[in-house]
Image 1 (cartoon, rainbow, N blue to C red):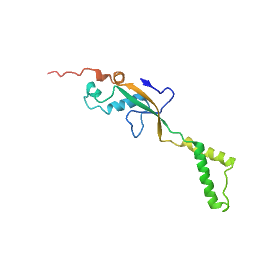
Image 2: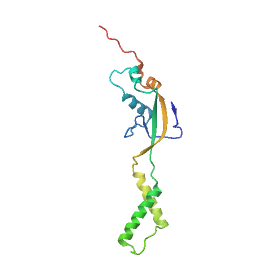
Image 3: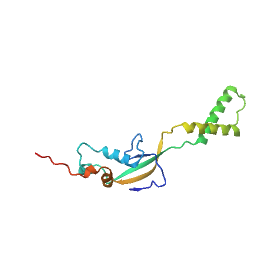
Image 4: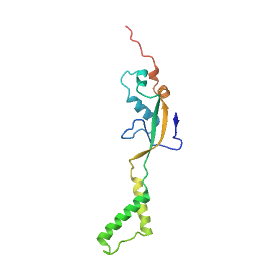
Length: 149
């Protein structure tokens, strides 16, 4: 397998540009891709007409939320709301250091429990199809049993 995954630790792998990422390892992603071409009793030759010699597998990691950016947004929204309802009509409240620290702590606490959904591509790997099949699906290389009369 050739890859550029050494510097990454993807949590999902995919070969088919799926809308939802579900495979947490390369083998599961390759198997899903190959099985998408498999029909009952398909032969190796028939399969190889549809699948490339090397399958490109893409690794994904979840996006990261910028806590400081979200903390600033939360604080701005809160201060604007407070100023609108309770503030001096001729002035705006500036965020203090203590307010900024509290907003950041608040957002970090939320992010510890929040499940980020979007992912981004971090690396790719190339898997030799025949080698993968030999290792993971050796039945493709067995001779079909001949019918006896």
